Length: 208
Image (cartoon, rainbow, N blue to C red; front, side, top):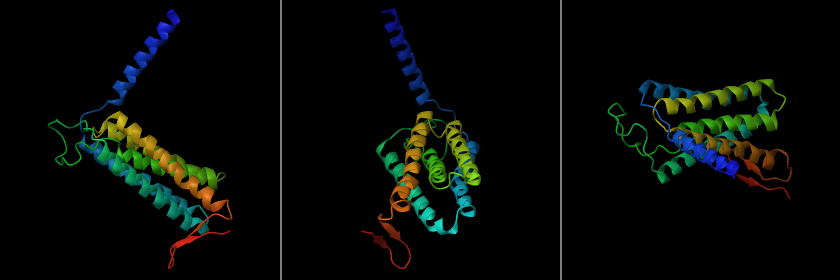
């Protein structure tokens, strides 16, 4: 009985700690906010380095998949922010951004969602298509590092609660994984899979 009560008490303490961490936030810092914009931009650009590594025959497929993945991430970010109205940590502070249009769009962190989509996309692409490429692994590590930095800065800059960033990172990672994974399943390893045609004629060809 004592062990059971101790276990229940530990669970309650853990839940309380997680609830406090979920709402963890810092005062608004304009400089750190600007740096987070820069790291997000770099996170989106770094996967483009793969164009210097992969065969030219894969350019079109990778570009199409990456654009589709990031478009999905941006759409998810926009829809969720409209559905979930959570105040940003700086709401009510005297030292805060002058633009109030995003005051209640804290969940999820769009920066974290998009950055982690790019990172998960790059790693999944590398793991599925170029598992032996040391250069692609380096690109993947760099993208993850920038994504993690972006997420941390969104908390430290006072733009988001920790929970907003963790949610954005989780959702973004799922989207980033699905992009190249589904492309790999549908287009690369199945000769009967639908093939996307891009150019003067846009459509879908199905081999039977």
